[in-house]
Length: 230
Image (cartoon, rainbow, N blue to C red; front, side, top):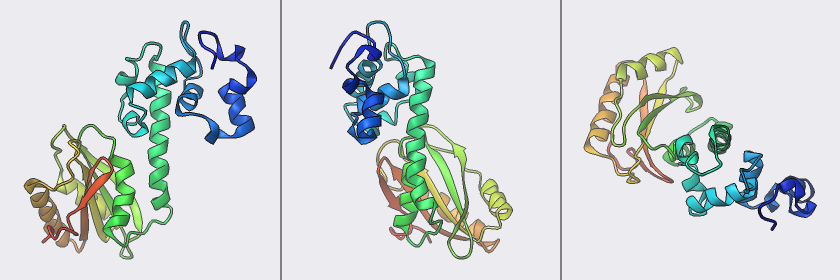
């Protein structure tokens, strides 16, 4: 493919936008798709060249790329704030699209279905975040919210906030979720204690805690399946 000259000067069959129009988006490489998002290159480097470098840094792995934050993307020479923001936005849309597959159904009948919803939302976070799914009596999703953000290894959860939001949504059931940036989905003792503390507090308001999903990259642990919820 041509190097060191603007994409507009490439043969039409090599230009990613033209290629997408004639052959479809699936025909483009990851670097070409990133090049379209970046729109322009830098001095002596096309947008596709930048896309190739970004994919190289990410070890040709989109999952690894999705973990890059804006500052990390800006470390690639030629990728400024606008380009980094555009790429980050595209990755976030991808995560939300995965979650939408479950959100359309809006009903959770198992820990697996709860995990299928929560894993795309939380697998790429570099710090711990705590999410609550608010359900009605038929296990249909009313709303979901991130109620706290933490460090690499911990997050502070205010039980009063969870219950207040549950009452606001007229929720009958809850599913908790949080991520382990370490990549280990195993529940810690503090995870277990917090879960059972929330369960007992919710029970006083006739709200049932169904499960707590711990997400670690693309893996998960269900505290219900592990019989860790008392």
